[in-house]
Image (cartoon, rainbow, N blue to C red; front, side, top):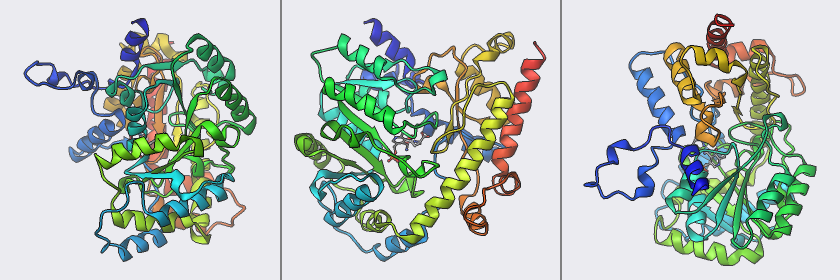
Length: 452
Ligand code: PMP
Ligand code: GLU
């Protein structure tokens, strides 16, 4: 009961569906507790403010700033005529192309029948949680949608403790202690790295240590590697290398290929979990049928890779690394304890050091903090509470994607490969991000120094 209470407090209730309270609307009670997902809601709020003429720095939604690579777009055009329903688990040639991609990027061997294609990895994670009765284990913080998906399906959620000082990473000791105290029910651990919301990843050694605990307790691990290709050093590793029998890898086109709106994700299952893939395919067959045909044909090209995509990823990582480093340094300068991100495009600063001053100006939760900053500076971010952190902790997620990725890529190509992206580049091509972080910085200085 107590745990359930904590879950309810912690999961995404950025703006709950209060208009569904009346019993006349016979809404599934699990949905009443939720609102539109925080990431999508902040995007809509930001766009509305922009259409009302306000200057908004869109650090809310986490969407790739880069365009879909040209060769992939060309492939989509060439396949616009594809009109037939495709197999529920996905087009064979696409499954095949994904197995080769997994071998190139992770040294993992799969056969095409181990791959399940879906309309975004988010939907696949949802049907996984609907197809298998488990408790869900989430390091806190974790991405906004995992817990609400569990709540919709009445699964229990356990938030596992992490520390900012350990880069919010799950430790093997915490995982082990949880599993020892909760035996007898299947447990699904979702591990996401490079991580949304904090940008850090696990080293090979850390993954190995977690894998050993997962194997000991026979956990099912969903390894959400959607930002794997955006590891800034280009050296992403998977926990599946250390726990192949119990790990499902999740990835897709949304982040590294700039194609969030194309809605294509996949899961790669170990041989021994084919029964689970089968159950999920049944679910899929009774709901979305199969992913849009032209998108699947175009995705074959994306996963095939090649020089153009390698170059695109090289430049994208370089830009994200530099911009992430620049903003982190600014945040550190403000007195915020934060280290450079390892991948993706998120930062998760903690302003709890300013609690006293923030309290004095009527801000007592991360939701208040985000709201006030949005109203007073136009900088849109998401509160730590949306990611499972306590409301009274002053954490926020900042997505540093508010720039024209197409222009930035073209400009980066003019710079010698080994030369870094400097501040002058960021000021020219990521000016909204720079301006936004300056506004945030000024706001914090004014509101905290004033009350010191
Ligand atoms: N996992 C994480 C950590 C994410 O940030 C997202 C956001 N798009 C997803 C999964 C889902 O991605 P998609 O459905 O676009 O594949
Ligand atoms: N994953 C993205 C984010 O965390 C947005 C897309 C989504 O939530 O579906 O902001």
